[in-house]
Length: 176
Image: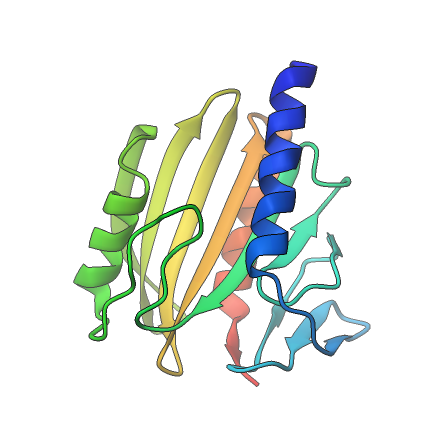
């Protein structure tokens, strides 16, 4: 990866975190279950990846955010996705989630958006290419809020491992 691309990615990530990050009490159990206590309070498995001390977005990484980064954000109707993304409508359903991902990621190459039932919830899933990295994003409705799980990782083992961690987050996420 070129140093210019890394610097742009790190700068973008820092702006994203500063722009919409909130901090609150974070509890992590010995079996890697994290509890985020700000509203809506949720808990899920981190699969042992290191994490930041912000809760919205809550970031996970295997190695200082350089090769893989997984973010978990909670948003409410009327809010926009970061970086001038689409506004979250009042009425949320699986078709709306799928549409939001298509709109948000319309500029990505190799974009594939679908729906899948995970842990008795219909989840919208997007897979795409982003330069030398791959991305996968999940949207689901939890306790009236939109939960967004985002993975961006180097192709190969980092993406493969990250995809498993992201899936585990989505499978285990629940209201606290």
